Image 1 (cartoon, rainbow, N blue to C red):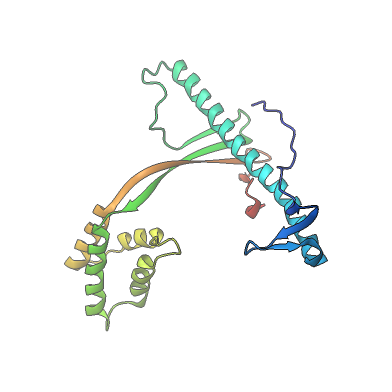
Image 2 (cartoon, rainbow, N blue to C red):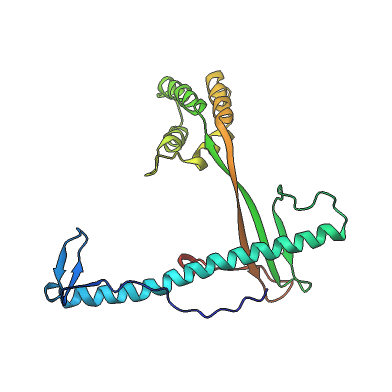
Length: 221
């Protein structure tokens, strides 16, 4: 993959507004403050944040372009392999997880496909059945089961339920008929609303070594 570019910061407004030969800075409430009234420390902070954000936005755009180029290159490779093995239905949209590796086994690219899952109205029916179970079992129910049920239906700031805890509920082996009906309702509520591809990169010093993830996530760097 050959993509040459010069990395420069994205243009960021200076934050200084000139009106009638006077300079102002706008605060978070939209008020225009004469620049002389802005504390030097606040101006210094403003300049530094704008400077850093210019690089951040440029880097974010570059990472986005890199992913697009990478997926395009891998798709082109997949097409060549399809031609090599005379696959009739080319450009298969139903591709699953796949791994690409160098001949020496030292570099590896993994593409993983994850379903985006949402829940229909049956979920609330399942919750009602679980509430009945929890209320009736309150004296004897194991605390960890009660905790999983509580966490599963606690919504986050976006109003979404805890999917990982929902899946943990489905793995519990409880024979109560209402519990089983609740699990059936939850399964029926699950619907795939889309798919997302994740690409990850790995390297190792020799074929005997474990893989090390090459991260381009700032939070993991």
